[in-house]
Length: 236
Length: 236
Image (cartoon, rainbow over all chains, first blue to last red; front, side, top):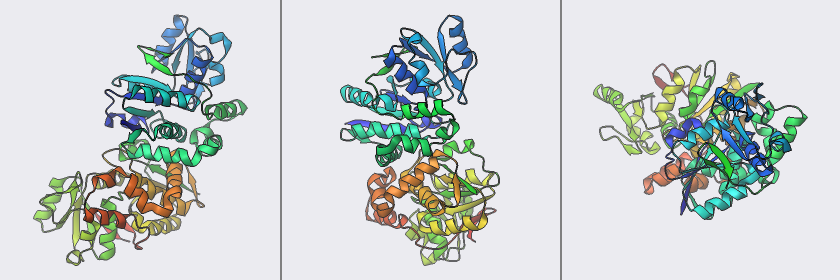
């Protein structure tokens, strides 16, 4: 039986063994939602980097750059981290180099030892579920959280994924059970729960950000499986 | 309004500011449940220490010693970490020096900068709630967890405490909201939820441990407020 565990923040990732496992990295608000939505719309690949300086070297080579620090678009970048920006036609067929406060840090931590790194968001949660059932490998869900602390929206993604798999996996830690139970009590009004209770939602203000939030809370908007190959995330 | 936050594991305590706050430390299975039950029964004080070696220096001075490593009683100690042992008449009026895998580590982390350190368990959750309402100071709930990872039973304690205070506090992080919602969905069958889903419960086997577990899941068994004064925990 597939074993599944959840790391609620990269800050405690060192307590987990990643070797031989599929790492599902999520940052629902909004890094991995941007990646999923962009790749689904036609973006060729996403290159996640940890630092703004690294992204700027890609910019110098003509790449599209995207991302934020502390929730604010980096001035020199082409776009920020609204999923709608990542879906724009101008970037179809292009590679986007992206760095964010939490999401790309989590991807970087995962890539060092996991067998595979796949990119999850509520937008593509069923695609991830189906892929895990096919692969029959142990799974660790890595939530990006917010500056080292757990976040509600990422925990809800973990719960949504476990909910899909619950008859076929063995839950090996309390965080996974708690994520599942959190999701089960919120699943009929995910968008409202995130809107009203996620501290990240309180940091986002304005109509544009509210639209992003509602979009990122949509389960199964699309059927794509973004996976890290070398330095690039592409659709499998 | 009182601000309340929750640290699901001491591993991320460095991300929290403790200065000026009441730190409520919990390790439901079983360190803080032992302290609460023992002090309520008549134990004079509990001296929490981080290391087995420190406890042995207290043993040499004639103190009662208690605790475990990895869930197993330390051989040289007087008693382990069953709350029933801590309640025995033999220890009434005595001071117990205690060290455990997770609980006393969390107390040690809290004492360095919090304004006050109080000891919470499901057994005395209402006493803690009343004390916080009296004090009107900001609160951080520190869950001992298990070897750095969050644990279900400690998260449920956090939720139970927040549930008591929810009309009088401002929740400032996602962990607190998640703990509250976890508790609210489990509160009618806390003992069964812990028994069936806490990984710690799976590590405890045998009738004695099952009795401990059911006891530790009892809300408001007693009305005591253990607080750290210098090196000793006594009832306020």
